[in-house]
Image 1 (cartoon, one colour):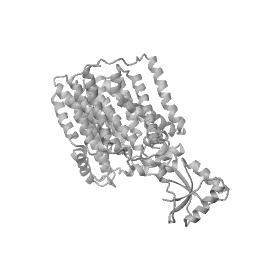
Image 2 (spheres, rainbow over the protein chains, first blue to last red):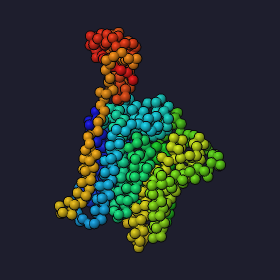
Image 3 (spheres, rainbow over the protein chains, first blue to last red):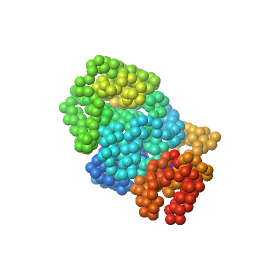
Image 4 (cartoon, each protein chain N blue to C red):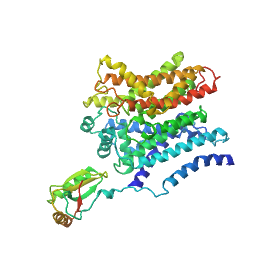
Length: 456
Length: 119
């Protein structure tokens, strides 16, 4: 069971990667094989989101979820995207011209250290048990039900905790069970380990084109050793997966605001669509990205606002079917437990809680503090758009955390994970700081660029 | 490839290879197998079951239950075991001898059966 389960899981994830590479090739092309390798982590999440969303929407529409669906959908995506890419004239990647400089050795050390970290984490994830309440109480039961019955059992899904939580994660887990040949909830942690590997690869690959290695890799390593990030990367819950999609989408939108390359907004829209089908907080986080982009591009709103609006509409269109499904089947909505007019006495303590969690080095090490310093430096060198985007992004995420603690009066105002999910939620803000810090510091280092050249 | 490129590759690959070699130097980890969910009984105990099979899904388990029922072996049930399979079993036995006798009857009827510790 063990090695065949692993082999099946890796084959499934290779399929996600191939789908993503073909989709990225379609929307942007790859200049060289090295560029393809650099963006492979992003490609993985593109493939995962594309395939996962297709499976999820088909499932909601009533299509059976089983062996054939699992294979046919990604194969169709690869075939269709390849044909389309050839039609629009995408050439295969060329050979890279490798000119090794000292900075590459800095990157090599960073990559090696990251690799060793993930090797050590693999050992923990390979034999991890299911200890987290959300995982055993509803994420995994839903995944097992999908695996065994091939459909969304209305009674089961609407009576488990979190009935309004979208089913993307259970769908991905069920696909993993099919690949492993059984409901191996132990080996499933390797799937989450792969999410972590791909995220770090994707983020580093995206940031590397605009950030010197000596700025980038310390942030990556700080994130990995932060108590609530690196060590949690194999936990079979949806929080970090949501954060991964959020941060990658945010970076792409930040790049789009500067480059105006259509593929960046298209891919960010796909990732945001994945967010809204992962957890109900995904809606809030997607809205945060949209608002931050609008605020940061206020001076060019005639160009950016319609395009951001179109992206938001596409995300809403993806989000709608699930919302229709659970309302039609009598499940509680995503605002369940929230008061329309919360007690104002809770407002300030809730906000303070969110900011305390954000700035806690016990959870995120120095990532947030470093980002704040980088933000100030970014403003000093007049990299206003980049500073505005990430400043608004992190602030809104934090305010969002304060808001839900305030609005859901059953939630005690505490950092205790069993009582209030604020710490898990704030992972999105902390990871956004890990992405923003290097970009802002790089802009500060370049210094003399134009006002909006912070991401060049 | 130039020597600098090889050096770059080595900077990445050497730690990635060295770490797992170092980690398993004192012995590879032991991975449990699904067989460890089956614990054949050899003595009397309060938790004895006669196990008719462990199936991959509830549909197969229900089929086996129906087949057993059809030939008169009633009272069996199915439940999810700790190894991700569906166990079909009868838990109404009070001694190893009773369990062995039942298992022999079931095997003569063309099914599999074994006395195991439950739980």
